[in-house]
Image (tube, rainbow, N blue to C red; front, top):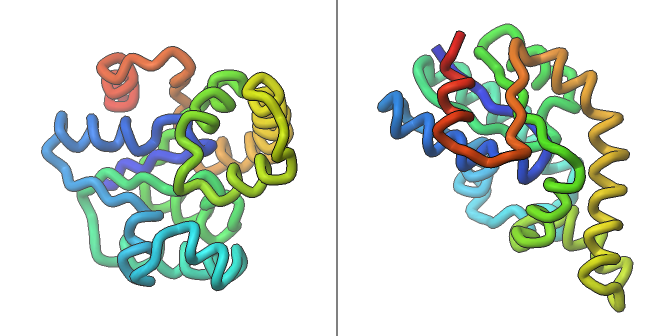
Length: 180
């Protein structure tokens, strides 16, 4: 069985995936890292040099490849993966997908802290070069609220369960994910 983790960026998919992998002994496959290895480029370079549309095409192809070759893994997908109808259907039909949710305020704090390697966050903050940390947090929180409103129905469409990661306790989160 493939346990897939979906949710907004910085909701904890990678960290929860690592913890689940350790707890279950299953291999962890991170879709973004898989694409980076296939393309021999990091995420920022792919977005900058080839564009988001190219990345999204590779994301769909890579998800299909993984699901065709693996059958007992932990799979962490990118925050935008479920926006693609094909990817959403694949996650729903071929995985046990868990939606990791988190408050926009905490997402903004995590995005500001972890912005390296996140081209969408960097681009958003670059539009406000002289903003203070508080202003950046407000910008990111507002953006997260807007994107979550768009994405929530799509995340829930491909998931059978939702787990809140606002209060980060990896042991409780992994237990909740594994609790049928």
